[in-house]
Image (cartoon, rainbow, N blue to C red; front, side):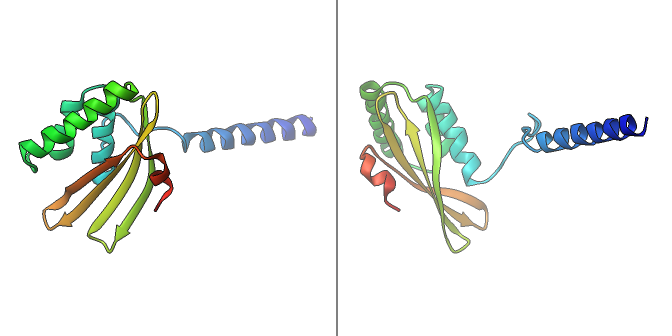
Length: 146
């Protein structure tokens, strides 16, 4: 009887502990929204992966850049999509800080035929984070350069 009771207590403890560890991997509630530069970038990249490039650029840049600059970047991205297929995913490669007010994020956007590297530069003003620059390259070798 003691052995059976001991075994059932151990089994209960194992099951309880396992479910507690599994809960750590769950996603936050859908109403939860992450803020900051990384969340801003990922909202824009999500839209690119969904094929909505115009909305992606509107999300990323808002009204902070000239129409000519945005049109040039959109054209280049549409050309990449036409040549390499639709992007299907992205990955964060690095986050590099310069003090507490400037940060660079490097992501790769994965197209059907090849990856494209994006660098996003943010500045933290007294009003919050501002996207100051974005650059991208198709040169796969540069992905490995810090």
